[in-house]
Length: 65
Image (cartoon, rainbow, N blue to C red; front, side, top):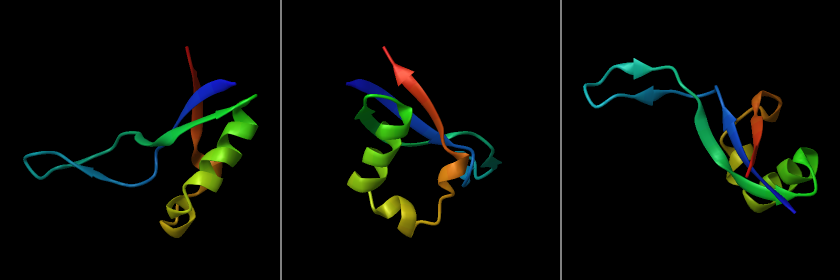
């Protein structure tokens, strides 16, 4: 099984001095034979992702070594 990290450009982050920062946010880690299976496993294991309103089409997956 391959390991993946999934990030999204959605959402906001606030810096320590209160400024809004645009960046990528880590959604989670998952395993699968490929990225498609890994994202399915990610969503199955983390129902809060749907509940939080994230657009899964915006997710960016990176295979980890």
